Length: 313
Image 1 (cartoon, rainbow, N blue to C red):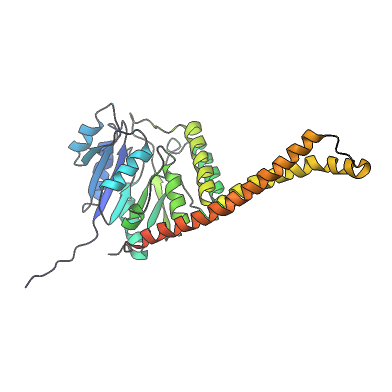
Image 2: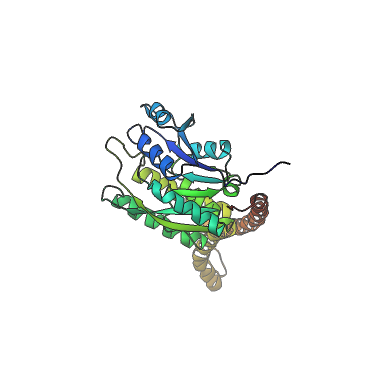
C-alpha cells in the first residue's frame, strides 16, 4: 500500500540581476534564510562584473538572459520556472527578505494571486525624492485610467501565484514591467493584497540602473499604450470628440456667414471641417469595434487564468 506524503507549495525566489556583484550574495543569503524551503534563482542580464560567480557561490541557481532589460528577464523567468508560489525581488539588497514569509502567508491564507510589498524607505538614500514623486504621479494616473490601483505600482517586491505567472503575457522590455504587471492584475480583477515592507539603501558599490526621466517617460508611455489597448472606446472616442469639437469651432463662423449671405466664402475651411467630422466618426467606430475585440480577448485571458487552481496550503 502506497502512502502519499503531502508537501507544502513549492516556492521559487526570482532575482533579476545586472552588475550586482556587490549586493547579490547578501540578497541570496537573506532569502535563503527567510525561505529555507524555497529555491533561489538568479537571472543574470549580461553583467560585466562577477555577479554570476558571486551568486553561484552564495548558493543560488544561476541562469542567463541575453536580451537586455528587466522586462525581458521577467519574461524568461516566468516562462522557465515552474512553482506554486513565486517571490520576485531585485538583487540589490534593498528589499527586506525577512518579510517574504508574511507575503507568502498572506497569499495562501486569502488565496490571492498577487501580494505587493509596498516600500517604506528606511533611509533617505533608499528612496530618492524624484522617484517617490514619480511613483505617486504614476499611481494616481493609473487609478484615474483604470478605476483602482496599488499604493506602490513600481515596487519590484511581489509574490505571485502560479496562475498569475502562467497567464501573464509579458510584453515589456525594461523597467515598465511593474506597470504592466499591475495592469494585468487590475484588468482581470484578480484578488490581490498589499503589505508594507522596509526599503533599504543599496550596499556600497551597488548602483541603480533606473533613470528617473528616461524610464519615467517609458512608464508613462506604457500606461498610455495599455489604456489605448484596454480601453479603446474611451481612447479613440476621446480623440474623436476632440476632432469633432475642433470641427464645430471652425464651422460656427461658416454657418453664421451662410445664414446671413447664403454663401460659403471659405471653401478650404469648409472642406477641413468636413474632413475633421469624418475622422471623428471613424475614430468613434474604430473604438467601438476594438472595444468588442478587447472584450473577447479579455474573456480568453480570463478563461486561461481560471484553468489553474487558486493558491492553497
